Image 1 (cartoon, rainbow, N blue to C red):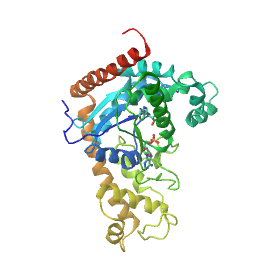
Image 2 (image 1 turned 30 degrees about the horizontal axis):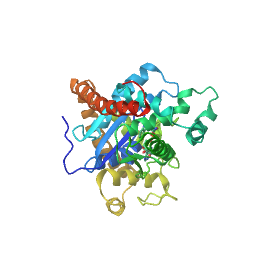
Image 3 (image 1 turned 135 degrees about the vertical axis):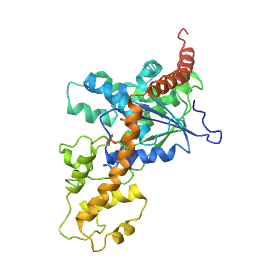
Image 4 (image 1 turned 90 degrees about the vertical axis):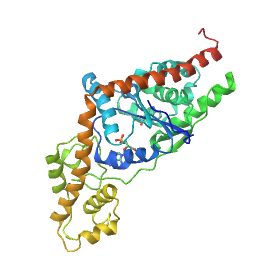
Length: 334
Ligand code: AMP
Ligand code: TRP
């Protein structure tokens, strides 16, 4: 079982929604950063499946995605010995805490959340859970007394709301929660779509040829890279404005090999785009095959079940303690 190393004193918590197979962009832009952070912080990482159901989901697909995402994160280098990886819905205390927080969150303050305004304006038949979503997020965070919450800029307002809720609760009922700080994760190198290199490689893209998913078969990955949009200059040179396609492929090389841009430019001086693309395909395939091999070992293993069971027990105990304290402070029976 994981024992956090004694010289690691600061903790972080973050949730990831189980919305389909991750892309090479997610891997390079986000997961590699998380892998670096795991040596510096006690890390709680969970699959936010209860946030996912605030919009309609197909139950079978959702169920598969949850387990698959845990296995993928581990396969990508999130070390289960250094992080507590768990599934939000396996810990019922998140929802319990959320209700107590709902009864301490002004409706007006919740109404200001821009993500809710955006999402609800796109579909008039939204559910109540879409509105109370940030309070569940506050419960996720406040249950664990963490120092930092690493999120993308779009989630900053939700962490600020969490802080406000916690500060007011502490004031009203006495010291109950640690006040967490938001930690805005810089977008790592932005990986662009292979077909349209002017837009970000995205899970939800309509054209599958532009997007590499971590579980794509190896031949199709090679085909996608060999077919990537380039330009007619025939010089491997980094210039995102004039040569977005080639620059994107250079960025992928830099992220996966640790070589610099100029190393790559020098390596391919006088060579054609075909040779360069074969090189890019080889390194992407090497990295992704290793991830896929680890994934295949993990996905159906009993160790994964055991890990999730253990971590559900650990996190339940932590969150239960907080829930009981809140009940006591609020005058409920416990
Ligand atoms: P999303 O898939 O949009 O939910 O994003 C999850 C995480 O992956 C966020 O931290 C994003 O910044 C990052 N990310 C998503 N797509 C890319 C991309 N094409 N390049 C770099 N980072 C990305
Ligand atoms: N709402 C976050 C997102 O969509 C996911 C999330 C849920 C989260 N609970 C959290 C992130 C708690 C950080 C902390 O990305």
